[in-house]
Image (cartoon, rainbow, N blue to C red; front, side, top):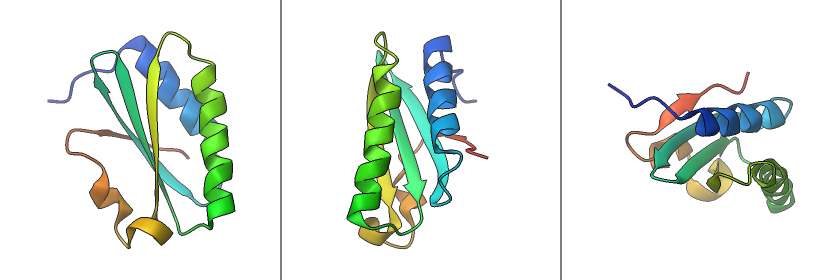
Length: 99
């Protein structure tokens, strides 16, 4: 049975999902809590490096809104990590839909 996310982590995950909802290249967000750390993995279709930098900047904006949560944000761009970026999401991470 998966552990329930704390209210802070839930708010962070929902804010990330909302921020990336309109980005067609984004496929989903996975997350997990590790003590005071909230880890997030954004899985994308193949995108170029400027596109990835743009997504990272958006993620940093969302993270900055949560001063009481430490966020470790990863982009798994299938152009750079291969055909199965979801396979790089650590076991135990929870999926949260973007759309």
